[in-house]
Length: 145
Image (cartoon, rainbow, N blue to C red; front, side, top):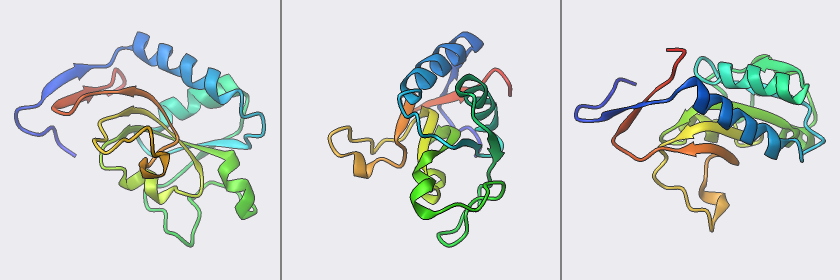
C-alpha cells in the first residue's frame, strides 16, 4: 500500500520498537504455553524474530495468503486446539484483513491504525494484542524500511 495523499509521516524509531517489544514480550510471557512465533512477510518479520528471541520460542515464516482450510506456510502441522498457542506477528494492522486470515491463531500487531477497534468487544478486533495505536492520517515509517 502506498502512502495516501495528505497523510503525515509518523517516525517509528528503534527506541520505540525496543520499548514496544519489551511490553509485548512482558505481556506474552504470561502465556506460558506458546508453541512458536509466525512472522507475516515482510513487515512482521522483524518483530517476530525479536519476540521469538525474547520469548525463547521457535520462529516460522508465514504467508500473506492464508486460506481458511490451509495453515500458513512454515507452520508445522498441529491440532486445531494448538493453533491459539502460536503467536502471529505483523507490523501494521490497517483494515484487519491479514490478521483475520490468521483468526485461528493468537495474533499480535506492532502498530495499528485499525479504526474499528472496540476494547469493550474484543470479538470485533482482528488482533489479540497491539503494542501501539497510531491515529489515522499518519503513515508509519519504520526504521528498517
